[in-house]
Each structure stands twice: as structure tokens, then as C-alpha cells.
Image 1 (spheres, each protein chain N blue to C red):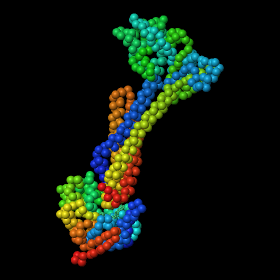
Image 2: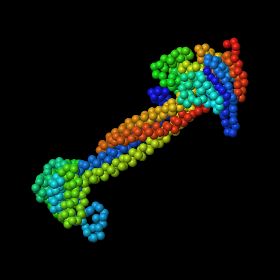
Image 3: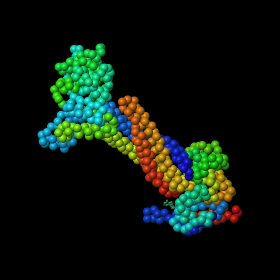
Image 4: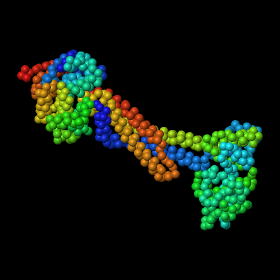
Length: 400
Length: 227
Ligand SMILES: Nc1ncnc2c1ncn2[C@@H]1O[C@H](COP(=O)(O)OP(=O)(O)OP(=O)(O)O)[C@@H](O)[C@H]1O
Ligand SMILES: [Mg+2]
């Protein structure tokens, strides 16, 4: 029996057992579709988080006081030391490092903003003009602290706050009161919405000196640093740590977090999540495989007389085994293709329902889903096929 | 062309042995027309199955065309079934989901013949067995006689040298049965060896050689001189 005839004959058989075949194909397809949709969801979530996180800066390093490693802080705690604060002087020192393109010191707090008979509490960022480019913020109008004018009592309003306080008039040029000080509105941030749980539409930004005065502190909350290039991030980190060690009398009490490292961690965690979800979905494929095996065993039983007849007219055991095997191939192939299409359709629906979620199934998941479907279907057919091939011709013919 | 020597076939039912064939010695020459008769359970079907290589004897030897069959591999035996032997069964054994034409085509597919060639042979067979109008009907839509004609067309499409028919008229009424016998006898007239198992004495006597069986043994073996 030729391969073409085997494929054709088994294809006809699959078509003629319409309902049974459709049920198997559907079971297979749902498994594959589950793999595709769930990995699309997982990978979409991963890409979403990474995009969000990438959007807050490029080649970003964050310097914060204290050591992240437990051993250091434990020793510090035993010796009764508290980590030294970061200061503006530290920030200026770091800014001079060759790997650093620009830096922005940062303080964060809350204060009451009042103007035009309105009053509300706002989140206040204290920084320099560089904060805007480092954090990839955009000004809708105006400017913030043109270089060299860091001591001006200027304030930048978040989009929502500007709209709240000055709904009808131009915000720029207006005077507002923050705490006990008066500020001149010099810019309005473009609306960006929430990013990483931080809504830039509801903040105000003032020069760092004013912020330190407002919060009555000489220390900094963070220093944001942008490395000159991606390849210089690691050396920038080492240089920052060395500089801080020197300025803190040889004490390693500063932590540098790179955007890259956080991204990599997110990436790993979410990738693992996607894999786990794909694995769970793949279990449904195994279940479908067991279904295929069961249905084919029943089919061999029902077609016993036919198998006996085929042997009587000269089919070899190999012919019979291949016929049943080919049936499984057709069924799993159809199931895999249908499942892939269903999965793509499901992913499309997800993207339509949640436009911010890039729910595209990764290629590896689609390929793995299809392969697992084919392999389970084919493995599941081995037992029924060899059972059919081994049937005793005389007994098989005798069966009605 | 068929030579059975000291063939035995024993079935074991629990601790009881059934001697379905007990020391069978038989020679059938090419082109003979043989009927096998005997009471139920006498071993007629078992003998036919062994001649048709569907069953293996427990003892003895089987030669076909001077080749020792008993030693051949499973694949070689399948090839002999495909090329030299045509089976006709009492219950037709058509594949229910295939049309008449497709059922007739099955042995050709198994032999690996290209499709175009198959179609022309199937058409000839449909013509010869007056099944042209029924070519695309499934077995369920055919009468008993038509079903047996399809089965005979299938059994002969490879031009086998032996036709083995186990009660070919058992499921047919007398008139239709006689027509089916005529078809088989026509094949015999073209030189095919014909071996028919039957309960029907009248049909059995039409053969040129009648073998009578009882309890797994050949009791009588009679050749008509007239033929
Ligand atoms: N697979 C089997 N298992 C056990 N015993 C069997 C088997 N096949 C046949 N037999 C026994 O072998 C003996 C011969 O059976 P066989 O079918 O050859 O008889 P038969 O002459 O064809 O009978 P019938 O006219 O009823 O078809 C019977 O006693 C039968 O019960
Ligand atoms: Mg019988």
C-alpha cells in the first residue's frame, strides 16, 4: 500500500466518522487554543510591564541610601550605625563621572497646593531640569528651570492639577502657593496617565532646594542617573559605588539599582509565569490525547470485522497499523490547525478587549502547542494501531 | 497447485481440545472445481481458512505452486493472499462506509497500483458484474445478491488463481443463490481454481469434485468422470 493511498484512505475514514472525528478535533483544538491564548496573555502581560518600565527612562540607574545586602545592614544594625544620607554634594560628584550623561537629585513629599480659591494636597517632587529628560516626561507647555536657573521659584504642574486649578485660563504665568512659599507656574506636564503605579498627572515639580526647605531636610530621597550608553551601565554602577564609598569614608552604604537589572528580573518572573501557564494548558492536550486513544480503541473494536477483511484480501499488519496511525495524524493535524486558528482568534479578541495589552502568542508557544498536539495524538494512536494490526484474521472475520 | 500433507488444527477451549482438522491430506490441481460438504462443526471453514492463509495449521505442511507456505513470513503470506487468493464470504464482508466501487477497489489499493489504472479495472469489474448503476451506492443500499456480486468482483479484481467461497449463497434465497453460483462457475470456466464450502447438496453436486468432511477428517473425496 503506498503512502499516498494510506493517507487518502485514512482521510476518507476520518471524514466518514464525522461526529466522532469532530469531537476529537475539537478536544485537540481546545487544548492548542488554550496554550496559544494563555501564552498570549502571559507574554502580553510581560511585554506590557516591560514597556511600561522601559518608558520611565533609558539606561537609568537609581542611587538610594542604605545597603540592599542583608549582611551589610545586619552588621550596621549590630554596630548601631544607620546608613549615611545622600546629599546634593554626592549628586554633583556622581554627575561628574565620565559614564554619566546627566543626573537628577530627587526628593518626594506631600504639601498643600493653593491658588485661585482652591486647595488640595499634592505629591511634590523636588529636582532639577534634568529630571524631565531622564524620566522621559514631556512638557505640554512651558519649561522647567532653564539650565543654570535652579534657584528660581518655578513650579511645573501635572496635567490634571493644572486643569483642576486653572480650568479656563492658561496655567503658565500664574502664581500658586505650596506650603508657605509662592511659586510661578513655568510649565505643565503632558498627560501620561499612570505608569508603574505612579500618576504623573497629579504631581507638581519644584527645584530641589525649595523641596529640601519645604520638607526641612538636607538629604536626598534618590539620585537618578542616566548612563551615556547601555554598555556603560555596569561601569557607571561600579563608579558610583566607588565614589560613594570614598565620600562615605570607605563605608559601602549605598545601593545602586539599574533599570536593566529590574527589567531582567521582571522578564524572568513573567517568562516563568508564561511557561507555567503554557504547561497547565498543555495538560489539556494530554487529556485530549487520552481521549484520542480511547476513541481509537473503541474504533478498532467496532471495525474488527473490517480489519479481518482487509487481512483476508492481503493487507499486511504494517498496512493496518499505518492506516490507524494515519487516522490519528489527520485528527491531530486538524485539531492542531483549528486550535492554532482559534487561539489566534482568541488573542485577537483579547487585544481588542484590552488594547493596552500586547497579547500576541509567542512563536515558540504556538509551535510547541501544535507539536504537543501532534505528538500526543500520534502516541495515543500507537496502542490502538498495534492492537488492530495484531488481530487474528479468522477471529476478526467471525466478529459481527 | 495446492498440496496439504498431514495438516492438523486444534483449538483449545479451557482444558478441552477440539480437533477442527485431524490429519488432512489433500491435493487440488490448478483449475479444479471442488465443493466441500459436511455437517456443522466438521472443519470446513477451518480447512478453507488454512488454504487461504488466514489461519496456520498446528502440524503438517502446506505447499502452493510447489512453494512451502508454512515457512513464509507474515508479509509474504499477505502478498500471496493479495495476488493469488480471492475470498467470498457468506456475510459478504463489505466495508459499510465505502461505496460498491470503493469496496471493489480495495485489493488494488493494497497492491499499490496507481489510481488511474485502478479506476479502469474497477469500471471493467462493475460492468462485468452488472453493477454499473450501483457503483456509488453503499452496501446498506444494495440487495443481498448485489452485495455478493460486489464481494465477488472484489475477490476477482486481482485475477487470483484460487477462489475460496465459504457458503457464498448462505444468506441468499434460492434463485439469487443460483445466479451467484453461475458467476463463480463462470470464473472457473476461465481457468480459476474454485473451492466452495456449502451445506446445499444440490449446489455441492455441481462441482466436479466433492469432498465430504466429518469431525475434522476427509471422509469422502469423489471426482465426477463426466467432466
Ligand atoms: N476460534 C475457535 N476457537 C475454538 N474452537 C473453534 C474455533 N474455530 C473453530 N472451532 C471449532 O472447530 C470446529 C470446526 O469449526 P469450523 O468452523 O471449521 O466448522 P464448519 O464445518 O465450518 O461448521 P459450519 O458448517 O457450522 O460453518 C468446530 O467444532 C468449532 O467449534
Ligand atoms: Mg463454517
